[in-house]
Length: 325
Image (cartoon, rainbow, N blue to C red):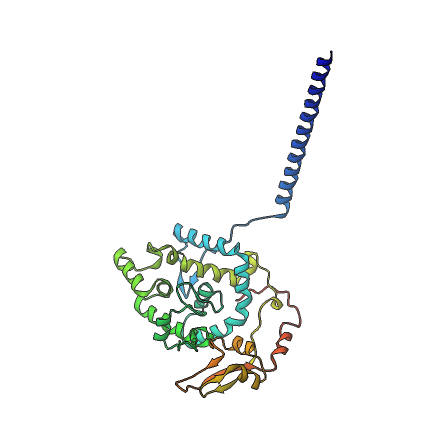
């Protein structure tokens, strides 16, 4: 009898455990169903809209070719859902694009080339692992070839106006060589000799007909994707108010000459800080300018004291989505 009692207790315990397991599994299943319903109700991933016709620098993109359309689709998806990077580009564009657009117009380069700058640097002064620098990502030798001063003290790749004019000269030369702005953009990425060799080897004339290395194969499509998103951010899920963007920084100009200039003291003497001096003149790379050549430089300083720049982003909140970057 004692033995039977023990067996009964064990069986009862197993039954209770089994019920608990079933209950736990059912509870978990219900939780998963609730979770799935919540996702369906509140989370959506959209495929991007692709226009029927698209132009780059006045040249028609052959979207009727399946691999052209799918390549553009890939870059649209990548940049739509790499939200932080794309959002920062939209924010910075309000500060940087006015200068780039003015120079492109003066240099007779299509305005669409401003989006090349976006994919090169994200509209900021950065240095690549290969040593390319600045807004337009010039290598040192190429930058110097197009008139940029690059030394231990000065790096004009980081000056927006100077580097944009250099980029215009380079792009116009590439256009003359290859005949199209699309091919000029591709050559900007892989080098003129590299593109020329591929065109010759594959007996083609159009970028869209070439089999290229992965980076250059995606390069023009990335430009096109950023163009579409930044021109019509709301169509691709980005809501950006005017007050969310970064404004242009007002400045005045003074001349700097002489040798062994202490830039910290120079900034203080001109009513600002060394930090603000470097923000407005990112082509300066040191706090002491030896200037052995005795050059005269144009230096930007704040219109008012640097602390008053804190008022720049205040004002009326324009909730209209930016649609024309």
